[in-house]
Amino acid sequence: MKTSQLIDQLSAEASTHPPKRPLSWPVALGLAVAVGAVLMFALFDVRADLPDVAMYYGFLLKPIVAALLAIPAIRLIMDVSEPTSEPTRHLPWLAVGFVVLAIGIALEMMIVSPANWSARLMGDNPAACAASVFLIALPILSMVIFAIRQRATVRPVMAGALAGLFGGAVSTFLYAAHCPDDSPFFLAIWYGIAILALIGTGALAGRLFLRW
Image 1 (tube, rainbow, N blue to C red):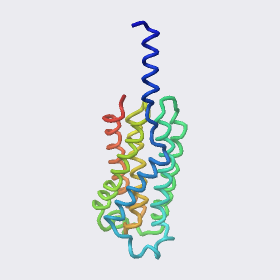
Image 2 (image 1 turned 30 degrees about the vertical axis):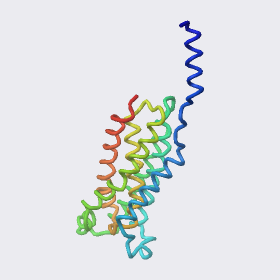
Image 3 (image 1 turned 45 degrees about the vertical axis):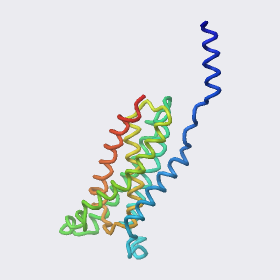
Image 4 (image 1 turned 90 degrees about the vertical axis):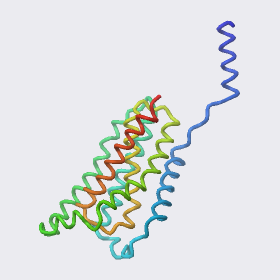
C-alpha cells in the first residue's frame, strides 16, 4: 500500500470515529461538588447552632479559606490539564488563602488566653474531623482525576496533587456546616492534615492514572 493510500485510509477512519469530546470543566467540577455535598449531608447533620455562629470569625474562616484555596486550584487544574499551558503564573493566588488563615490564627492568639490554646487546637474529636474531611473529598478527587484524564496533561503528579487540594478545599467548605470546632488552630492543624493527605493521594493517583 502506498503512503498516500494509507493516509487516506487513516483519515477516513478518523472521520468515521471522531474523538470523544472531554467533559466540560463546569460540568465536571459541578458534578464533583454535587457528589461531595450529597455525601456530606447523607453522613452528617448540620450543626444545631449554625444560625448563632454564622457570623463568628472562627466559623467564617473555614469556608472563606476553603474557597480561597478551591478557586485558584480550579484555575491551576485547568491549566495543567493542557500540555502548552504555564500554570506557574497562577500559583501565587494560592497564597491568599494561607495569608487569611494566618490572620485568623493571629487574631485567635490575641483573643484567647494561652492557657486555652491547647484545648482550642485539639477540639472535640480531631481524628474524626480529619477522617471525615478526607472521606468527603475522595469522590471529588476521583471525578476531577477522571476529567483531567480526558485531556493531555504533561504534569500528571502536579495535576493529581491539585485535584487533591481542590477536593480537600471543597470538603472543608462542606464539612464546616457540621464541625463544632471553630478555632483557627484546629482548622490549620486537623483540616490541614486531611488536605495534605489528599494532596499526597492525588499526586499518587496522578502518577498512576494520568501518565501518557
